[in-house]
Amino acid sequence: MNATPYHFGILTSLMHMAWVRHVCGRLKSDYRYSNSLAYNNFPWPESTDAQKEAISRVAQGVLDARAKFSGSTMADLYDPVTMPPELARAHADLDKAVDKAYGRTAFSSEMERVAFLFERYEALTRPLLPPTRPGRNRRGSGGAKRPSTRT
Picture 1 (cartoon, one colour):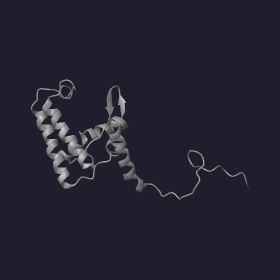
Picture 2 (spheres, helix red, strand yellow):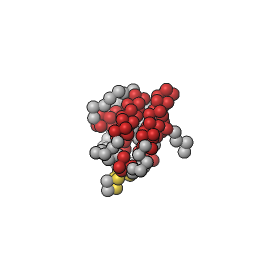
Picture 3 (tube, helix red, strand yellow):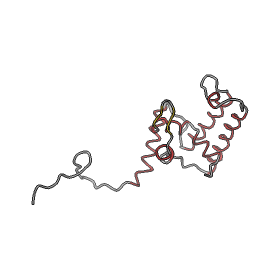
Picture 4 (tube, helix red, strand yellow):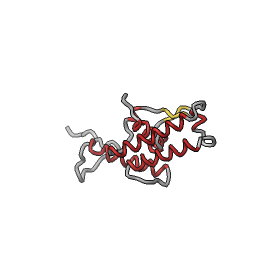
C-alpha cells in the first residue's frame, strides 16, 4: 500500500477512532478491525491539497512525539494517566486538522461525531441505491409480495 502521513493522520484521528468504536466488533477488550467494516466504509473527508498537507504535517508531529519516547510501549504512550503531554498535544492538533477537513471545528460529544459520520456515509452511499418510486406502498419488512392464490 502507498500509505502516506495523511492516511496515518486520518486513521489515528478521533474521527476514525469514533467510527471504529461504533462499527467494529470486539474480542475481549480489543477491537476487531475489519477492512470491510471499518476501513472500506469509513467516510473519508473530501480534503483539499492544503488540508492534506496540514494533516500530513501534524501527523508527522505525532510520529515525532512518539519517537522521543522510544523506550516506551504503545500501551505506555497511550495510557490516559501517563500519556506524555507532548503526544497529547500532537494528537489534539491532528484532531483539529482532521475535523477541519470535514468542515467542522468542534463536536460536543463522541455521539455527535458518530452521527455526523453516519450522515456523511449516507450521503456518500445514497447515489448507489436504486431509485424508489414515490407513493409506492411497501408490504412487510422486506417488501415482498404474497404469492397469488388465483389460477
